[in-house]
Image (cartoon, rainbow, N blue to C red; front, top):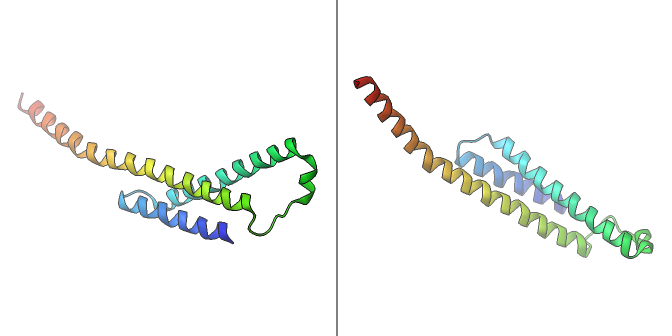
Length: 117
């Protein structure tokens, strides 16, 4: 249940970013879901492999439901990963927006001087 809440929040967070910069909202929403689920799978698979190699008998005592310590840690790390990619995308979009008008203005000036000669 907690993962669903996190997924909905990540989707809306990325969709808001896409809306601010005129991008397709659902593309970035799905990107957020992919980042979250991918990190969760990678983290929990890595942890499972670690436990399997260090203590093979503990694999019989898995609790797949509920709030275990490793689930809480994986949620926190996954949220951090989603936020980190969000900040990278936000910085990239800000750079694109600041560079685009300058390039367009230079192109207009170049076309104007080309027509004069």
